[in-house]
Image (tube, rainbow, N blue to C red; front, side, top):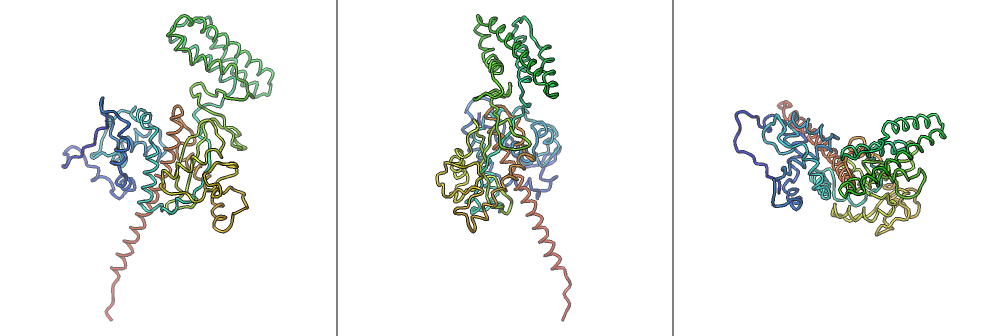
Amino acid sequence: MRPKQQQHSRHGDLFRARLDQIINMKHELVTLADKVDWAWLDAELAECFSDQGRPAEPVRFMIGMFMLKHTYGLSDEQLWDRWVHDPYFQYFTGEEFFQHELRHERSGMSHWRKRIGDKLEILLQESLRLAHDSGALKKSDLARVSVDTTVQPKNVAFPTDAKLLETAVHQLGKLAKTHGVALRQSYVRVAKKAAMMAGRYAHAKQFKRMNKQINFLRSRLGRLIRDIARKTEKDQALREVFAIPLTRARQIREQKQRQRGWKLYSWHAPEVECIGKGKARAPYEFGVKVSLTTTNKRCKGGQFILHAKALPGNPYDGHTLRQAIEETQALTGREIERVYVDKGYQGHNAPKPLRVFKSGQKRGVHGQIKKELRRRSAIEAVIGHCKTDGHLGRNFLKGRLGDHINAVMSAVGYNLRLILKWLRKLLCKIIVALIAAICSDSHPKWAS
């Protein structure tokens, strides 16, 4: 059902304190809350809800919680705990009186992520509108952009054959115990010991002994798979329960280290991909590729992110440029005149290839274009801030939808941090100007 609207009373409460009487109304979070078009967000998300059932949580509360979470780099639990004792967080989410306890369900954020995950681009669009209205971003700054890709690592352990085989044995045994399937042997204890010894032999560079332990794990997993398959073949319900786990276990047992094609790197996150970006410290990262588009020029408020999107399947960078440009233009409403990329976009499919300039390019690079091409590497600092200050450095959300949500909301949080910083500086400038005007008026004037 459509979210219920937050009602504001016209009078005070004897036993509760009004937030506008106990907080600084010039605080940057208060200013930002007053600038956000909550009614437009409510109208855009209306189609995600049905007309029947229990009313959902208010739009301003849930969207405000999403914004605060990614602006300050908090987890869901940290956000809920901070909301109770931070009056500025409560004002931003639409509360009128200070609340001493949480009146909403903590699982609401997970439900909302699943419901509106495909429409979170409107929050990125709203952050750009806020930057424009506050003076931190100009319309002309959107004409020339920089595009790059990075890896959004998933919250998984580094995959090794021994770890994956042990995990498969443990998960199949756990599932069989849950559904009452009696096994000849669970192999949990011997698998744990074999995985531990494989790690020790690998550390000591005794690879023959390590491979022997891995083969031992692989054979025990095969026994477990065949035992479960025999004892569930006559029960349709059990076959459906064990269909996906057995498929994953067979994939882990059969895959080799240097084989071509798709491989399973995590039991609980099968969407994880192995991506190599040529880094010396981390030759391979496990997660999903993400495309980011930023302004080429450093605007008054900073270098804003105009577009962010997860790219499952590890596509070639050049084959993603056309879609990134088209979606960026749809979000900003401004045609892109020039695009600056790195050498990984060689052979791109941009709609206007002569307007795309690659790092190291000599032909057609002169004057202003040469200066802007040197600014291309500034997008690397933006990616670094999204990973260290936001959640782009470690994704804890589930599935491919979680990858997309985390990428978009990390960009929204980065833009909101720049806007808050800009509002803070703007307030300081206004205060300094007022003090200077007061001091000049109070200076004594001597009679001539």
